[in-house]
Every structure is written in structure tokens, then in C-alpha cells.
Length: 501
Image 1 (cartoon, rainbow, N blue to C red):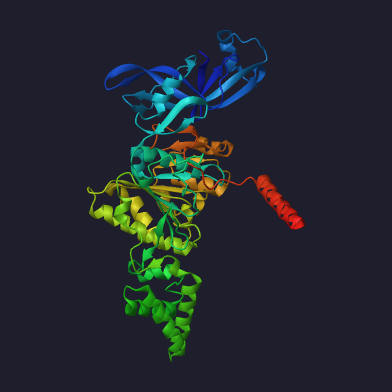
Image 2 (image 1 turned 120 degrees about the vertical axis):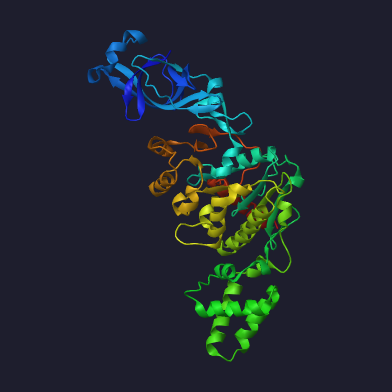
């Protein structure tokens, strides 16, 4: 026994703690109360989280006086009060909320590690870390929680991509199919462990890179010209039909003539830009040609198929699309075509293809809040209908306020890490009813690698310290001092060589 309940205030219980057994903030305690379940009375062990601990002076609060002897308090001047957030009790694998209020004086006890693991974790779940307050208590999230989509949200440097890597490792172990949209090349070394050794079956990991960066460890990334409709092509080239009518019409004309060949399309545009007698048309084709060359469309376009969608659905395959080096318009063009094909494949061959988990890092670049894109259309479709066909979405971003709110609200589970920007916190709050104000208030105080998880991934809201990764981390911040020192030494070596030569 470490204390007793003395009442309730707002949405929390108040308790007095034994000053010789004070637990940490965010640790877990329990009390027992009689509950009626399925027509029978049981002794329910109600788990609570300590959300507030404070030392108070006796002169300012009389609540302590009746409990002085109970806790063997030596001091006559202060007592310790705690606020408890009620999480519920476990019954047949489900968490229920108590319907009876504990009476003042009800004793509370420190929860055991094994009880907390049973309370929070799923037996065959994905092991992502441990309770912040209990290093020995493993947290395993429910893989079925991905069916209702997931959002991983945190400010830069809080560890969101690191966490995504942990989830990828767990999904790999479960032999799941995953497609990773990787704008910065953070996941391309997934097959390597921290020591540089390969820890996976290489045949199960495919890394796709744009053809101008493709190497022996990767496959070419791009799209067929005939897979681009005029609206997708216009978006890639930053042609808005309403603002650039003449350029849009020139592009549409070239598409009709060229058919399925990008080479023919380009040559037609170039020819019309040189030899058209109509000055206005010539001007439009010149502008179109300028946009084609400025956007380096040939970096991602080919007349042949680049990605075999069926290979993405090979059992246990993890496919990583490395979009680094491409501007947002080119990247969005690839993502739209690939996701459209993936969704269509599952829609048509629902039972013939395995479920697929789609991870989209830097999601605000593909589904922005302030304008619509072709990727917004297909991702919104996946968010609203994907679960019926076994297409599950995980979006990752450091700017939730910049993400399309309709898509963010479709993510039933949220993994939220350290966040201090008020507009981003407000966006998270608006998108999820499961994140209470108390949990939102905790976001700025989280350390790097700590997360609050709510939704279908977990039985109850839980605070987790993410486990250490097996795979090589990408996208981490550089050590500035080490980098400066490295280049200083390099310069000294060059200078020394020059003196000796």
C-alpha cells in the first residue's frame, strides 16, 4: 500500500501518498472496486496513471489530517498529493471503465510489471518499446490497429522516423508487405544493421531509386508516360488549367499527337515551339518546353514499365521508394501513379493479393492542407476505403497543421511524440477525440524517443519509450562539432601534402 484515495477533482482522482514510498510521475497504481459485469459482481483491479504529484503544506489543506496515522508520516508540516488518471480494468482481454466511484480511504497499490504488460500489450503484437516509467514492461501494439490507419506525429528530431523504422522491423518479422514512400532517403539502408552487416533476407527488400541515381543495390524508379493523364502531367509541370489556359491546351494537343511515347511528346512540343506560325501558340509551346526542361521530367519518365506492381505484392516484401533528389512535383507524380496502381490492384484482386501497409514519410509534402494535389485524391481514397481492400495507411510528419485535415482525421490511431508548436498541437487535438487535454499538455515534456499512443493500436492510451532499432538509422541530425573537425583535419592534410610535394 502506498497511499489512499481522498476524493476526485475534475477528471482525476485525488490521493494521498506515503512520503516514504513516493512513485514517479507517469507511473501506475491500482485500487480495487466492486463492479458488476455480465450479471456477476467482481473485484475489479482499476489501473490508474499518476499525472500529477505535489507537496502541500498542512496549513493550506485539511484533507491530509484524517490520514496522518495511516501513512506513518514523520513531518508535521507537509504531505504528498497525487492526481490519478483512471485508465480502467481488464476483463477478458478488454479494458472496461469502472462505473463505481472509489470511496475516500480506498487504498492504492503500486501496479506490478506483469499486470501492466497484460493490461497494455497484445500477446502477438508488435514490440515497439517499454513503458516510460517501467523499463522492464514491454509494450506490444496490435497489428490489427493498422486497419483503421495510423499517424506518427512529432516535431523535427523527436524520433518519428526512428519509430517508423522500429515498426518496419516488426512488420518485417511478421512477413507483412510494406510500401515506404521515402522523400529523403531515410530508409534505404534498412537491410543493414548498425554494425553495417545485413540482418534481413535481401530478396525481401527492394529499394527503388530514380534512374539517374540507380545503382547495383537498387532498382530503377519512375513511371510510364502513358500512365500520366493530362491533369497529373499538368501538376508535375506546375500548369494550372484555370491560370495557364493556353499552356494547358498546348500540352493537351501534344498528348493527343504523341500517344504513349514521351520522346514523341517532347519532339512535338519542341517542333511546335520552333515552327508554329501562330505567335500565341508558339509562345504557349515555348513556355511548355521551358517547363519540361526545368522540371527534368526525363528523370522519372520512360516508355517502358519501371515498377512491376505485382513484385510489391510478393509475400513479405518491403519496397522502399527513394524520392530524394526529386522536387515535390516529380515526387508527387510518382507517388500518385504508384499508389493508384497499388489501390486498383487490391480493389480488383482483393483476396488474391496480401494486405499492404503504406508508410508515407514527410506526409505534408504529399497531402498539404492548403491546396489539393493528385496524391491528396488517391491518399484520401485509401484513407476512406482502403481498409475494405487490405490497404493500410501510416502517415508520418513533423507538421500536422500542414496536413490535409480530412486525411489526418481518418487515422484512428495516433503516435504523438515531443511537440511544442501550438498550431501543430491544435491540429493533433482537432484530428483525434482520443487525445485528452491532459495528454496534449504532456507533449512538450516528452524526451526524444518517447511517445504517447492512442487509438486502435493500443488497449488504452499509453506512454512509451521506443526500443533500440536493429536496422541502420537514417535522417538523424549530424554532430556539428564532429563534422567541422572532420573537414578541418581534411584541410590540414591537404595543406601538409602540398608542403611536402
